Amino acid sequence: MKRALFVCTTLVLLTAWFTPAYAYEAITGPTGVLYYDKDKAFDGYTLFSPMVASNTTYLIDMEGNIVHQWKCQTPPGLYAELLPNGNLLRAGKANQKKQLAELGDKWPHKQDSYVNIGGTGGMIQEYDWDGNVVWEYTMAKANEEIQHHTFHRMPNGNTLILGWERVSREEAIKKGRDPKALPPKGNGIVYKGTKHYDFWNDFVREVDPEGKTVWEWHVSDHIGKGPDKLDFNYQLPRPIGEMYHYYDWSHFNTVSYIPETDTVVLNSRNFAEFYFIDHKTGKIIYRWGNPTTHDPKAKKPGWYDDGDQMVWGSHCATPLANGNVLLFDNGSERPQFRRSRAVEVDPKTGKIVWEFETKHTSSFFSHRQGGVQRLPNGNTLICSTHGGHVFEVTPDKEVVWEFVSPIHAGKTKCVVGEKDALPHTSHLNGMSNMIHRAFRYGTDYPGLAGKDLTPEVYICGDDCPRFFSDFKKGAALSADEDVADDEEEDEEDGPTMHSY
Image (tube, rainbow, N blue to C red; front, side):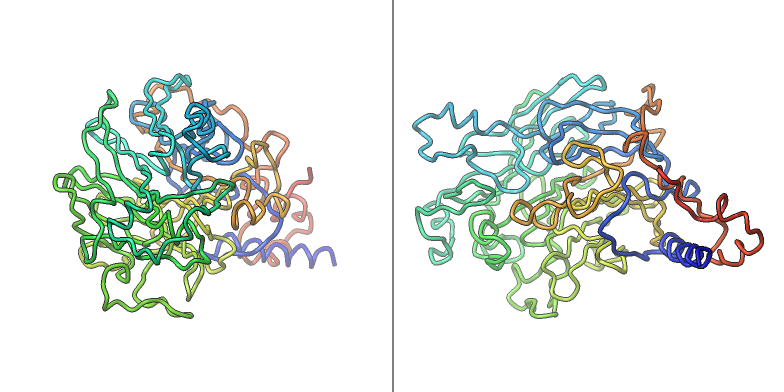
């Protein structure tokens, strides 16, 4: 019986690991590096910032060993990137409570923050390798503006920063918002414990190394009807969230730049579109993802019918060297298939030319947030935020590296389960190990030249099993035949997990 059970378990586990895009559902599972194919994965170091109760940014090798870490001053304003000069560029959360205290009676509402929409940050900081802040830009003025979600260091040394600016209800009506599409005046909309009384419209600011503003782009300047405008009265259904339905109506989450064409790339979660912005004129010259936002002839979605909408709640629109755009399609609230995927879009044709999704949605689905990165060898690194899940796939959609963050609310865990999920009242469908974006840097990346990358400790801790190596893969799917050759292989060579 023991032998039959072993063989059955072997087949199930091997099938899960070696069938491309196969997946399974489990409530309890291991953390750290789960799988690593050295021959097919892009060799390098992975950078990530745990989002919950942690100020640390980690750099790990392919086997999950920490090779460097930055102890930062604030919780992450979602994520960090490693610059070619070896410095860390990171968004951090500003102290809104302190700002409001300084306002005194000018802020009549008794609360600790003036805007608390998902993605709020407030500052961009650049840390050197030793953890010293060498550059900082704060975009956080009480009840006026705040940085959120993202940033981008341009080739000329300037930095693009995405922000929200407050627009009063009266100003919004003047700009075209239908008064009937407003919540009752004075009550405020409570989101994450903060009451919001006005609109927070997206804008982008470009600052030079001295912190001087050299360019801005505002959603408020591009309100209207048609392909080059944003409809102020386009609203997500109210059950998705009152802030999305009312005051946080466009909710951008991406800013990037294409130097060859002097184009700024933006992405709206609520509109489910990415945009090309002419850096010189500020005009919207291209948009893709959801024609129902601007084309009256487009078919709107319905029950089990996507209509003409192509992505849902998208994030991380990333321009590629071939002219295409890589995108994280969250798939949240999608009528047909509520699942996440990575898609590559050809803007010339408007067609999806490559995509990756798992066969089982429980293995890869992030209700909100997410990241994608095209690696130099053609593979794609995908960050499924809500599960702290980062994995690498080949162009043929084979998973060749997989990692689940063990950093849960600032504490390291070898195994996680139901108790590590966040309450729906605080964050829908999230785990306490969330990662907004992760990035892989090759061994020849300029920012790593001359750096000490000696492995320090396994990211999960030395007492945790290294699943990718402790799990013996064996010979092939025909494990029953292989094991039959030698009765003693049960303990040594067959797929097994060491006891700890």
